[in-house]
Image 1 (cartoon, one colour):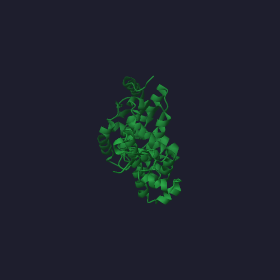
Image 2 (spheres, rainbow, N blue to C red; image 1 turned 180 degrees about the vertical axis):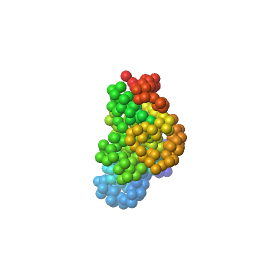
Image 3 (cartoon, rainbow, N blue to C red; image 1 turned 90 degrees about the vertical axis):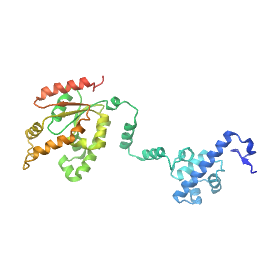
Length: 306
């Protein structure tokens, strides 16, 4: 019967193996196998790994065979040379079959913005804490987001930000030019980045966003998770009339079906807008009346703390 060597290099009979010694032996075998596998996956000869890590070929051979009583310091050198974390070599989970470890590695190499988004999604904090005192007005153009947003911000002493204005300020270009240059997809990316900046800047504020943002699932989910959202709505006729009153004749110019298209958009987005925590119909109401009702909604829903 072959003898067993303990982690101090002392010979011992199989029947006398201590449970702790057995666990140490298992650990050394696991580390050795993972070092060998990592080296082979990278196509690195043992001699090259020895040069890169400063660990002698003899130690590496013993380590890969599960027989080396290598120090933590030397093992860290090997891990660095293999471009792995030392936890990957000694942990119980197989690093090549563990989703948790793969996600952790991707998180480490992600941008700060992506890391912040992941932490927010996985955060155990209650939704109310994540939303802080941030209020977001959503709805189709002409519902009153800009007008009421500025008024409610002034009434509550909160900063008011229009998302499109934030995007234009950061990019140095009007939205129309951004769309022409980057297309709808590129603009949506700028939109998502602008929201992340706003979240990191403001704990208390009022935000007005473009009507189509609800069609971007990830961006809209961010809004719903980090803002108290209120859907401002009105009739198709008032939507169109308000847009034209702002001096924009484009919706009707040379397009006799503009009203039907507007109604279709409202119908298609109704379920998305309906995900907001609250809604307010501004049809037939003056800005002053709508402001009073909006302030009542905010107070009734408890959107502002303290």
